Length: 486
Image (cartoon, one colour):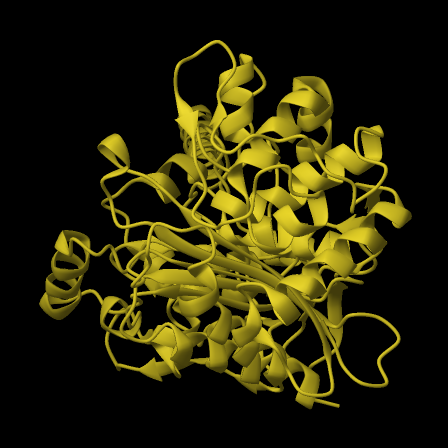
């Protein structure tokens, strides 16, 4: 009898060990697969059982959390949602996260291991820390000026601090309010269907995810390549440029909207945006040097993140001379985001040096202590300092004497470049109006802001200087907002 009891004890002990092993297998080995199972709501319940950390602009949060008292307890809220949507993106219980809400989700949701005082204990208990905050580089007044300037239009604005790469404004229009997408009910689904069906694509971030032909604003790059390569040594010398200019190897004749472009100097051609001079100049510089200058400024870089990804701006590296001529005036396959063209203006303003742009100044723990800071960005010399100095002078001429007069600011040095980009089948589309610029306030040692504005629906004529009428006033408002701040 005792032997049978002993066997029963062994068997029960074996069952207990088997039970413990199976529990460990389920809770440790198979836990990730259960977490990923769509039928498992526990991760979602845990994710939304506490308020999300906030995104800050200019010392105040532009996001918040609302207690719904439901299983997915906290919903995201937004202050001035449409103005900041191209930065924050959305955090939806149905559709996930985008932009900063996505790239900084670990900090905002509390899942980042850096937020855990005892990471191993959290792994064991599966506890979630309170979400941290994300402090942006945005300048509130500049953001508002850009948003108001684009009101009723389709386009984008990007503004940078040239010496650091800090993004001061990032606006896309038309925009949308991310608030209705936050929940998980029928209202969120209706908002999603409405926004995704809208032909104007309000959820498209045109400032960083849309590329456009940059038109004559690209002449800044062509002029930099010509000066750096030594093709141009005297900005005031005649260029022996015919008007019209026959594209090499073709019968196509390129014309100008401005008069007096035949044999114009580079300075005159830049001020009055002569296509013929810069198309011929690009051919003389050659594909190799044109490509090198464009890439030094950020073109063809598919790795740029701010911290969310930026669309790749392109300068074609396989061109014949006719294609190179058109690419050198910002047409053919040349494409750029507004952020990329702001980087071009910033490089000129910063003595030829490029700092990659960034949007997050620092992340913080719930108590406010710094979790991580952006720090200094690497410097890339995109052109000679002397070249940048000459380009600054020519960009000032555009504002003083050319098509950029509407960007002038009393008491400040302002440089700019206008542009109108043709597009569509047979160039039949409404031209895109561009303006890129920089500004240095009275008493400032260096320029404080560089801006790029593009408008898809401007009342633009088919001349190269019409961006000065539509886009330049928006750029001026953004620059004034920055210069007026301490």
